Length: 454
Ligand SMILES: Cc1cc2nc3c(=O)[nH]c(=O)nc-3n(C[C@H](O)[C@H](O)[C@H](O)COP(=O)(O)OP(=O)(O)OC[C@H]3O[C@@H](n4cnc5c(N)ncnc54)[C@H](O)[C@@H]3O)c2cc1C
Image 1 (cartoon, rainbow, N blue to C red):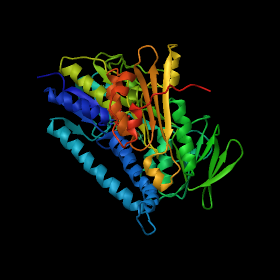
Image 2 (cartoon, rainbow, N blue to C red):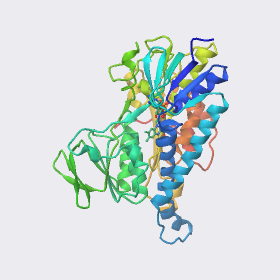
Image 3 (cartoon, rainbow, N blue to C red):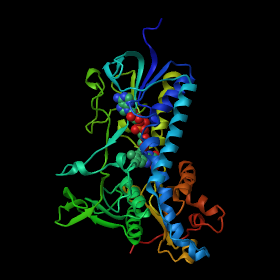
Image 4 (cartoon, protein in one colour):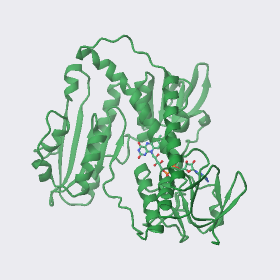
């Protein structure tokens, strides 16, 4: 009999943990996974999936408004927030069931409890008090939203609560300038709320291409979303009709909901890591090497808890790689080059590869191609919106280093373009590609003039 109860014990059944568990079990390993909340993790339960469902709901706003220009006559549309949340909950329950069934079908033992380390090989299940000895352990505990600290900050909701509000707030203040902040600003606006974004930076979406940062703010302002930039919240308090939010600059805003979208922290505290030799990095994330191994040779970590790239497909790829490495004899580093990402604002952003600033930082000559135009749909509807596209090209090799798009279906375009960027496509390959007409994406293969500053 083995001295271990499991070949792999996975802590956390989110994107990374579920994938690692299933692949490991597929290799014949004895796998257990502990989940303290709901199988599926952040992405399925309170991240990507419910977010996108709410984004779909919010986008009907523009569809209804634009419809008249195409000959439709509609009554006054009304929205039922509770019906939306109930539908979203049904879909998430369905997905959770599928995730659980897939794990079980693969032969993984799913344990609905919190698991913490007792030592390098032992986890304690907090509910039952059972101890499990595992040959290998994978930390896939994800991250949690943080609240900024100011008097009354406990009145702020985070993305966790925002998915389950019992009614649609009429006036919303979103604190933060990252993608989650902007996506929720768009959701609430689309569903009819007045929205103000308060962000301490001068611009939203740090890390994105500067042109994208400016253009998306303009688009959102055109729709009536207010931005208070270089500004922070000093205090929040209950007021008669909701919340009174005091800004550091002295202004006050009345709101029904204050949502903090100011960042996420790896879930490492209370995990018993002090009972192991697992080291954390200075930001409190689990420190790992290129193959996701921690400072203890048989303990691995993947996904948001490692503070690398906090995206679902990345966590999945990392979890898959750990399982391949441990049980498939292929211990390989994940390739983090050219990860496509989207921001599901209205209009949405899709981006892959280097920003202009990143490309220029290398010192090599960089060519920029960009265009901004009115989408065809807006010619009839009259909607004040622009598609923006930008290619960042290496001036010497002609390789396309980055693609940045704002516009309808930008995420879908960029997922496909990511293949070309990943393969090392050159601008000449884009030029040689026949356009698909009429589409917005055809502009990407017809950009001929280098952008000249000034
Ligand atoms: C609002 C929002 C929108 C997002 N949108 C996108 C998007 O559009 N695209 C995208 O790619 N990414 C998106 N993300 C990010 C994405 O959700 C995460 O990167 C991804 O879920 C990380 O997967 P993970 O496996 O590391 O952790 P998680 O999916 O967070 O899973 C960790 C799991 O571990 C469990 N757990 C923690 N500690 C313990 C313990 N001690 N014992 C047992 N269980 C434990 C947790 O309950 C959780 O279920 C979004 C995130 C948020 C918050």
